[in-house]
Image 1 (cartoon, rainbow, N blue to C red):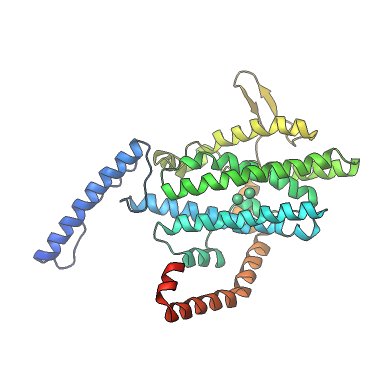
Image 2: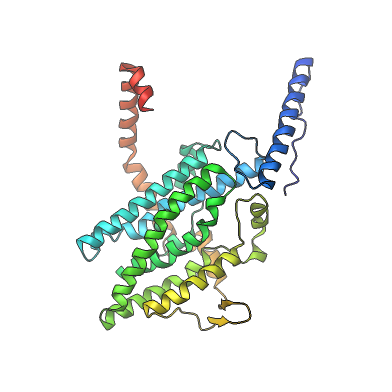
Length: 344
Ligand SMILES: [Fe+2]
Ligand SMILES: [Fe+2]
């Protein structure tokens, strides 16, 4: 648990009033801290109105906004395939999926806003490249089979990561995750079904499915983050009941889930060290290329520049729509303050 305890706030020129105010603020913070500790110990929800340590708030804003950015940037690899999906049905399913990801981004920005960081500030952090998002989205979706691999492996890894977040201690985050996970589970199934169709098609189609799995398997396993001994922030997040399981535990859970699914697809996972370990009751898997992972995180992935450039162009192109909507809302408020209140 964090040793962070509220200290008495220093005042520049203490008069009787300011000293009294500072003492009252310190007392409020002390009571708030105790209530926070109790909520965490009893595994209850912390709500935006509750007192919370600064580091808890900061950690959540960073995690939730990075998650939101990942949903928004994650629309790009598949959005690029909507017009090229092989049938009208495939197009409409993919369009619904990409729209879901936009919705996930919006729920998450809303959850982060309740912590006192404005949406514009978060957008700006993504726009300027200051904010991070999941590095998996810096890889291209080269073929239609890649769209299947993204659904099966990337959305699959996301679900494994996010189901425990439904119980995150911060209420708005946990509640957003419940809805997100329902949709992610549909996403994973549609990806699996694309790969199943290809792997039961012609030899060339099966090879295309295998190539896609070969490309996305390693980066999908890296979505859980670095190994536990190189992930110093995880422990604090677990003590705060934000994160429920460590990176390696979740990665193992994912591997155990996808091995039988790959067998059902008739595809091979590209890891010669992958085998059932009777003693552990889990699949062993080989080392991942962490040099590549950190290089992509630092901005040197195949598409880091393109993803951000595309986001900036879309944001710039849409500026007139936001301005027009704001001007319209202001006019409505002027003409009818009551209707503006009702629609707010
Ligand atoms: Fe999503
Ligand atoms: Fe998804």
